Amino acid sequence: MQIQALAAQQQGATLQPYEFAVEPPQAHDCVIKVLACGICHSDLHMIDNDWETSNYPLVPGHEVIGEVVEIGSQVNHIKTGDRVGVGWQRSSCLQCRDCLRGNENLCDENQGLIVTGPGGFADYLMVDSRFAFPIPAGIETKLAGPLLCAGITVYAALRSAGMTSGQEIGVIGVGGLGHLAVQFASRLGNSVTVFTTSDDKAEFAHQLGARHTVVVPGGTPPAPTQKLNILLSTVPASVDWAAYLEHLDSDGTLVLVGVPSEPLNVPIGAMLNKRRRIMASPIGGRAMMLEMLSVAEKYGIQPLVEVFPFEQANEAMQKVRDNKVRYRAVLAK
Image (cartoon, rainbow, N blue to C red):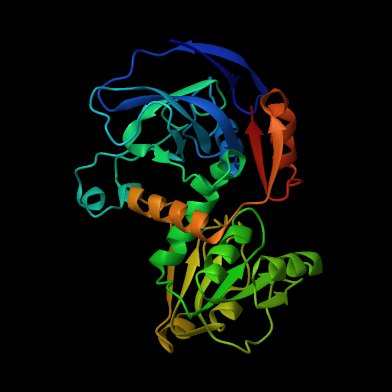
């Protein structure tokens, strides 16, 4: 099968038409006709080889939504004609302790979709069907892709940190990750406090469901008036972690999904005195992905997207690179 795609031929290059061949699907594989694909900053990191894991030509795209057109002999949980999505993860060993616990995302042998093969900037994608997820009918195709990356990232982090309902949840940042975190936390019955750097994002956070907003223009929040059970940081920058720790209640958890470039510098006393925790969280396993999609459909949780035709992929990528997209970019056919 010949697949038409867009690829970066070398580090930092713009996308160019690229054609490659794939073998017929093996036992657990499926072939997906791509209908839409989100654009994530991780696509840019891979194109630029920031993580030194890139192979070229590189076909980006790990928020893929499409229609199943062919399946392998052992595939029985999806069928041709189904609408499915594929996120960051392509595969795992499915046998280790983490996989057997439902934490395939923590498997030592887990493979990223665009790290070990072509992604969704193409007319078709072949992938292990066990990492292709049925998309609920109530979620639009153009909105589904970002849920498979940004959505699962914040949802899994909040759940892993202990989020249930009736809690006080804090979110640092109202961007591509944060605007979904506010929705998940608030619509599952929690009181959400948002920390942001601008008045307009504070107002937007209220519209999303935040009960309280704190504008922090200089990076250091004011003294807390309400203690939080969980504080989720979605920003890729260092902030005044000591000041933010004071916003946590006893046994509270600071969980990071944004990745600062500098090591964390935190006072152990602020953690010791109140038995606070710090953790980080990457995406989520297969069961968590299905749960997240179900919750998103049931409670109407939607990413705010800008849609571009595939022919404008380079223009869309540049807008993402320039941080001019509010809040997720999606290529659609």
